[in-house]
Amino acid sequence: MNKSHCLTILLFIIATLSVEAKHSAETESWLQRLDSVIQQRQVFDVMKAERLTEMYKKKASLRSHNEIVSFNTQMYDEYYVFDSDSAMSCVNQNIEIARQSGNESLVTEWRIKQSFILSATGLLKESLDVMESLDISDMPNSVKIEYFSQMVYLFSHFGQYTGSGELQDHYIELERRYNDSLHCIVTPADPQYLWFDVWYSINNGQQEGLQEQLSKKVSLSSLTTRDDAMAAYALARVYRQNGNEDMFMRCLAMSGIADIRASNKDIASLQELAEVLIDQGEILRAYNYINVCLQISQEYHNRVRAVSISRVYERILQGFLDRDEVQRERLKKTNVALIVMIVLLIAAIAFVVSSLLRLRRSRRRLHDVNKELKRRRSEIAAANQHLKEANESLVDVNEKMKKANEQLRESNLVKEEYVGYVFAICSSYISKLEELRKDINRKAKAKMLNEILTMTDKQTVVQDELKEFYQNFDAIFLRLYPAFVEEFNALLDPEERIVPRKGELLNTDLRIYALVRLGITDSVKISEFLHCSPQTVYNNRLKIRNKTKLSKEDLMEALRKIGCATD
Image 1 (cartoon, rainbow, N blue to C red):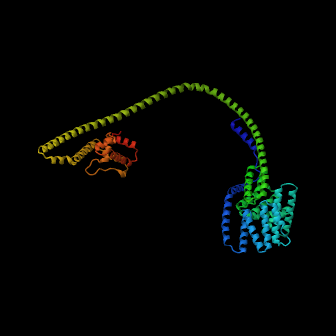
Image 2: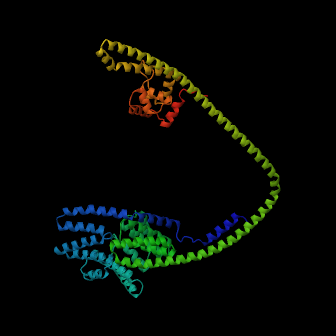
Image 3: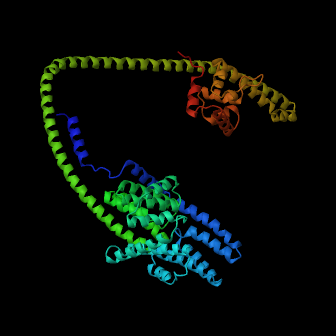
């Protein structure tokens, strides 16, 4: 048995311990879309808040009560599931206007809406007090529909708040009764007819045609409004009633997407979806969803939802504990599998070691035969290496000697040229000084003091001598290095090349670097030679270096190579 067989067995054992997903790939795709929309929840809320802020600016231009009521109605429709405080402000203002105008029917309508906000925020007793203060006998059917619908909504919240038990059963029964009353008066012309019909049909076990109608409506919706969310939620309840849990989850995800996009804070689908995921063992996703539900309930001040969410949190905690227990059991099984694999691996290793020992014995003789040959080869390689190193050392010594000879030859040439040049200059200056002495002596004997002063005050004598000195220097230097100007210009950028003026062999810049080529690198000595300041020499050298791309060290190395013979 080899290692690949052992790995195959290990993977098989681990695969048998994995848990299959309890929903379809299509449903998982919708859950992932919901996850993505949840991450953008704040963006949708900000967009809606900005839109409402723009709408609210129109209130300043309103004058009549009818305009204010109409505006408040429009704002209430935007606020009632988004911002409970702002929605209640619209309700209270319209109730006050209706009372001032004596419109009791309008007061009743807005009192029902007031009850909705109270129940939505968890003030159930106050909401019930408002509803019980209304007289249903004089209400038109349109208002009765709102009344019964609110009573259904109110008692559903009572049921959520009380949890399980007889009291919850009582509230569920009251909710069913008002649902039946609602069904008796609502007509298909009502925009919410399908929503009301779904709950009546579910309560009474009559669902024929509902799934088809709701599926068509949901498939055509953009999942961006509360109405879209309600339709998808109703379809989810129909699928659950029919026992189709996968479609139930998928429709809840659609409803949750629509709720988030519409910034609906009175959201139920996401909480129910979290409870289903707990049952399926997806505790982490359920925890994320219920966290969003808690944040939304806190933003809307929904106390009832917060209570029911706390119960879900208890289930999630228990789910985490159960999952840890399951994981511990799986870990135990995995450890057993790993122990089995270790035993198998030890057996495999023993087999491999035995095979290697046999192979080692069979190769040992060949190793002994080759050992002596390897030693001989090593000795030959070592001898060759020593010979190679000796040859390289000899080549290096020859190269150094060649360079030393070149430098010595160049040095001797420079010395010979400049020794003769210095002697000639000195002899010339002695002759000139003798002539000057005789001339001054003669004029002194003749008492021609003014002429002597005139002679010594003139600078032209020195300038002429320097000019002649530089011409002699340039001529001698270019005899030693005839290609100096061309080779030096080759070191500069093309547009920065130096061309001496007509009648000159070298100019000041070239003369400075000619002295550097001769080995005079000190700026002070160069300045003394050229009769200028050291700063002038430094500036000129810096200017030349800026005209080339070479560094200071590379430029000096290139200067030393000017005029040298190449191989």
